[in-house]
Amino acid sequence: MKKTKFFIAVLSMVTGSTIALLLCPLAFFYFPDSSKRFLYIKKYFADNPSINISTIFLGNSVVMNGIDAGYYSQLKNNQVALNLSTPGQSFFESLFIVENISKPSRLFLGCSPQTLLYEMNNIPPSNINSLFMYDYQLSHAASSIIKECGGEKTLKSYNRSFFQHNMYSRWIVFSGVNTFFRSLLRKDLKLENAQRNVFYPRPYVKKISSTALRKLQKKYHRERKKFVVNKNRMRFLQQFSGYLKKKNIPLTLVILPEHPYLQKSTSAQFYRDMQSELDKVQRNLNITVYNLYNILDEGMFIDHIHPSQQGAKKLTRSIAKLNKVKDPE
Image (cartoon, rainbow, N blue to C red; front, side, top):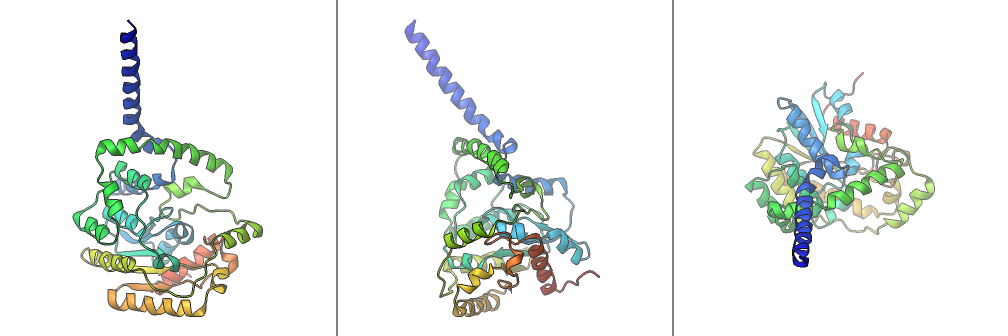
């Protein structure tokens, strides 16, 4: 009798755990989380299958806060422009998105000067898990680009079995709870907008205090004297532009604005070297480069890196002008 009860108890635990793991993927569609933006991007294209996309902007939260695709569309005679940037979006994540959306006429990839110096970031396993659950596909050509540019961990995570992805899905429950309370406590964040909006997904809406700004500046301060583009970054830009060229999509690299405090603490030689390197990218890789690192003053930032709404308007207008788009009357 005792053995029978023990067996039933063990069986119940195993059954319950199995059911819980199988149900975990459903949380991706119901729990709040920053990676849910990947779902809404796909949903937008599923709901608008015949839409003619003129321009797409990709990048991280600086692009989310700093480029208003709706305003850009006005400058472009109401041709459709979308901002499909995501929090912390890596170059590899940008490639994933391009693989799974309707073909645009032009693609803008935004990044900070600092990004080009660092080694390529593999996509965090949690984001890979989300991309898999939201049915993001990856072609052989895109997989080859990721592999050749230092993304072996990304491919290994993506190519896990369905059962392994299900097992890993339990993180979404904790992340969902964390995101919920974060949205309650952080009044400077507008997470709903960041998840669903494909035009101006501005997550940071409230300017921080001067005291908080100084703390962030001190925390993230770096000495920068020499600018050399990371080899894998350069290789990615070369292969990504070639990949897009086969689809007749021109690529423009946008160097995003830096806060004036960072410019003041950086040597002039750093920026001269940066311009020289960007000239090589434009000349050797046939990629258009807009170097806009110094177009915003201090009052146009909401914190140490994210442009304010006013800053976003100026940045968007600057891109439009460089792309030969007339300002509205």
